[in-house]
Length: 181
Image (cartoon, rainbow, N blue to C red; front, side, top):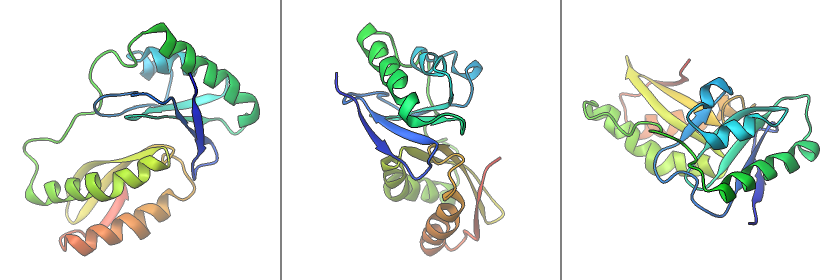
């Protein structure tokens, strides 16, 4: 098994491409070992000293590390954990991943989701991250930053300069974009 790696804009996150499907549907974002109880793969990765976050996408895994560790020493045990997991035949996630779209979305929320899904999320996924819609309220769009986007130094610029400008262009009701807390 050959696993490729790609840098992300976040220096503490690295994208791992195992060359196979990671999640057939949805995504999964784990920020702690306790939260990773439903994912044997994420549990294995959190067992590597220095791993602080695991994000699972369709065909990639983004690992976030602590500042105290260097990728030079962290990469080999992470690669080993990924390879061992896929060779074991265990499920990546036991249970459901992120929910799809809510059926009672307003028309504006549906338009926002459509733009996110077709124009923004594919570009962000190339950098090992994801941005998901939380809600639209009083002209403000609240989004969750995941994977390499969470804690990335350029995430605020991405939200304000890129996503906010695009949403405001296509949907006049949008006045601002904020990171959901």
